[in-house]
Image 1: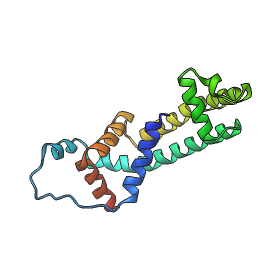
Image 2: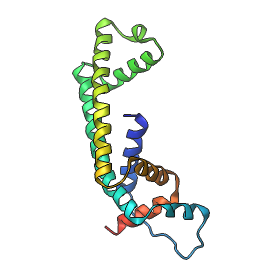
Image 3: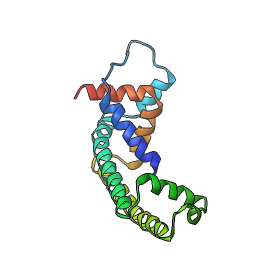
Image 4: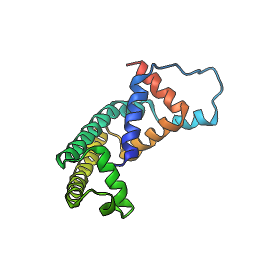
Length: 161
């Protein structure tokens, strides 16, 4: 699972569920941006809202499984990240304290490589169970993050629940 995906899901959860909703000004003429947000039906946005809570929970469980795998390898998350950065720069053996730490890093990385696809599969299944495609979910997520009109529509829908 990509860090960006985790961060986006966490951001989405805090933005949607952590703020009060506000109403759209329907009297104002629609801008091009507002017209673009109409490509999502209320039904699609409601499905998105419903499944996003599940996605956030699944990803939270996945992050916890990753933290557990790192700790089971006798590493801290910070140390694992330092070693991962060193590995990407082909400097793992230079940064690691000893061969045992390299082995611990490799074991943790293997565990993470198993957790990530499992989490991704669970997320995809949850999205599909909500009768959305992963592509549509991602499209709405991107629009929510970048288009104030879509963000407003989602908040208005949330306020009606």
